[in-house]
Image (tube, rainbow, N blue to C red; front, side, top):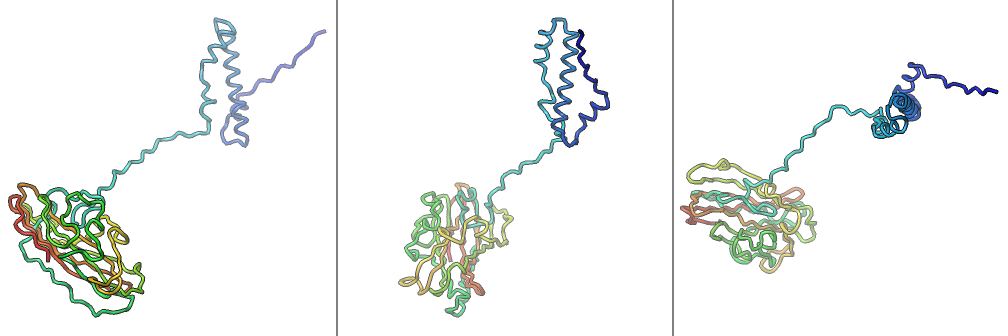
Amino acid sequence: MHTFAEKPKALQPGSFARLMAPGRTHFGQTHAMGSSLHVQRAETSTLSRHPGGAAAAFQANSAEPIAHDLIPATHDFGMMQVFPIRAPAQRQGRGIDIPISGAPEEEVVDQPVGSGSASGTTAPAAPQSDSCEQPRSMHKLTSGPFLGGLTMDSYYPDLKGRGYYDHPGTGGAFDTGSRAGANIQLYGVIPSPCLPSQFHLEQTIKRTRFRINGVVHEEEGKTFDDIAKSGRDASRAPFRQEFLGGGDAPLGYIISMADPPSTGYNATSNIEHDRDFVTTLVGPSGRQSVSWSLSTRISGGSVTRNVLT
């Protein structure tokens, strides 16, 4: 008795195309089926034609990568997009006299010196008030010990011992041999019951004269926001120091900052540098300010003038 096996129906070209068409509901299933058919046909063809027989044909087929198993047909690797990487923003270094956060400050010959017409008069004091809308007063300390037991190192711990200022506990001019400048403590007074967080410090600088080797610097005559350019956080310690007044300090609550503006120089420097500052304590609806100046002259690497007023 003969047994007849039913011969599988061959797939029509149109049916195979429909199985492989992307976007069908059961793509994963049809994709696998299409891949199997493709491999089966390849193997059948190789078994019939390979000179080494079935074993050799199987080894040859096993070494061939099957693209359908490596990259799904639905992936679209289109044109690659290139995104530029921006260079890190450069730190501000010009137009400031408050040392940059973290230092170092500007290079040698950072700040020029002026011809002596510095205006360091304190702004007329507004009538004192116990309102929390504005500070009572604003002051500058240009000589003698800093108030509150503070020093320049208290305000700038990152610059301690690094040669950016001298005699850190007192106000006045200094010359370190490579920098000529001055220490100054600036402080405002508010009534004790007021919230210190409602008050903030501001400081501007105008370079009234700035010349290096007789050449006028581009910043001469310009005014800058000194605190903003320094990168320092003026809302908290160490830059902003607070303490209760009394003793040598005015009665009330004290909000203070300090500044060691300086001009770097070397053995051949010829610099003229005059700058005027205005330091302000700002309240919710009023402010108090104090003005001060520093005038520096350096000739042939020697400091001939360095006056804080």
